[in-house]
Image (cartoon, rainbow, N blue to C red):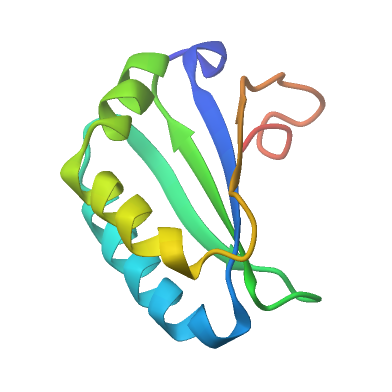
Length: 109
């Protein structure tokens, strides 16, 4: 699998302060299901250190096709449904392609 065929996604969601626990539960459930998908290389949850209501999910997919299949899964649809009323702002989702630079062990996620 070529690194250039892979897709890396950064998804950021900002939730209402009172919705943090509920959002974390919904995100955790979706991530557990996503880890079982073919083509999922990584799907990691992070919390912003300065703004704890902001969650960032870094995803790595084997191909654009694998990411497309992920978009149609029931667990992702359930996540969007659960998060909708909990959001403080619309989510930001950025799709990228790796550009290997420098040390191969450090230059690609």
